[in-house]
Every structure is written in C-alpha cells, then in structure tokens.
Length: 99
Image (tube, rainbow, N blue to C red; front, top):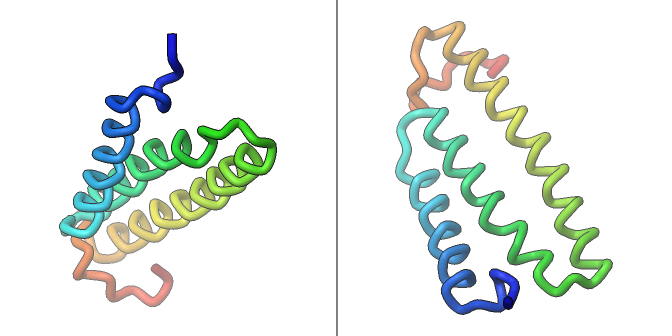
C-alpha cells in the first residue's frame, strides 16, 4: 500500500487540516481554542514536512516540533497566568504585563 501522503486523499486531508487549524486560530476569542488550532496546525504540517524521508526533512520536522512544543507551552502558561489574574480566558482581556 502507498503511504498516506503519496495518496491524493491523504495530502488533501492534511492540507484541509492545516487550513482548518489556521482558521480556528485566527477566528478564536478564547485562548484554549487558539491553542487547539495551533496544535491542529502542528499535527497537519509535520507529515507534510517529513514526507520526503530525507534526513534534512526529518531534522527540519524535529526542530519544528521542538520549537512549536516550547511555544505551545508558553502560550498555555501565559493564558493561564492571564486567566488567573483576570478570571477570564478571553483573548482581548490580555491586560496583565506578566502574561
């Protein structure tokens, strides 16, 4: 059987997931929803980056994953700090300088 990304339906699924994650992130008013959109983007882009099975592609996918995992933790920590100070998870309520 062909790998999932060689299949046109698989490539379309990952591209659609990438667009869905971007749309969710851009249109969200809630920090957790924005974070979920970023995670959908990560899960969609990693197979697209590493589809060639070239060592540099695998290295790029690993580096992308590590940087995105650190950024994801930072977004979650910042949003939890903001929610702790303001009592709201709304993106427009980012008033605390620590967050």
